[in-house]
Image (tube, rainbow, N blue to C red):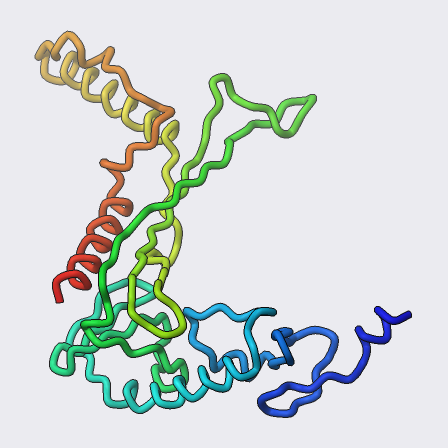
Length: 244
């Protein structure tokens, strides 16, 4: 009974005084914050049960002082896809945001000297491709076939009182590679070239052409245009952040 009474007792946001429902708020060390007030917190700072009401009050003051910096920001360079790294080279400041409404989003403004380093990495995941038989709708090929998906991330290391890293995804949609489908296409192209050489022009092709081995099970990231484009973008952004 005590647990239930605690669950349904009246709770109020310690910042705006809004009455809270059972869900839609965050429990702090010594109070509560509603979803609306929590939306004003920096995107890069995580709060929870170890965060105090005083911590939030202090942070919201920091956020209030950040807004004039956003309004004074003049973009001289913009790098990125869905999430962009914005530079104000004249004022030597940087913002990282996916929002087009900067005043509303109030992204954290960093001095050039606040950025200590940056790196990029790529996350790979895979899902098995199966086929349907009379007995099963999910039958594995032998050997198994997979579709590979890639997401590109950049981690920026910063000097800030609330967080020391900013990590964001560079690509708006994942990069997908199907090695088997690509391998089939390559083999078809080899066969077509061989056929044309033999029957089209009467020129004997290289002896290895028709029997060239094609790997259908290893993703060809080097030959994938989207993969290489995002890799180049990551390198450009990291280079710009490290050589301001």
